[in-house]
Length: 81
Ligand SMILES: [Zn+2]
Image (cartoon, rainbow, N blue to C red; front, top):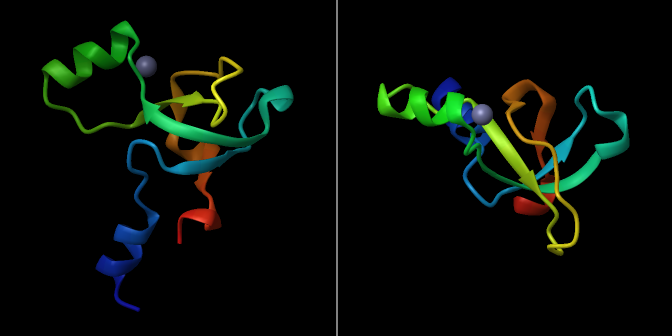
């Protein structure tokens, strides 16, 4: 597998299912990844910086998830493949 293809597969697109394994242990598990909408990220977006933070949403719409989550804290779920 080429490096380019590997990087493509590693990308997280909005609404991908992801596993959260970051610092908030009570939120570990399966989430929908959405672009973070906080003020810091809105400013970064205005400057044209690439999306690096995510807001996590409960796939069943019942729980509010963590936001401003680092890319390193989530892994794309194999359920997407
Ligand atoms: Zn943010």
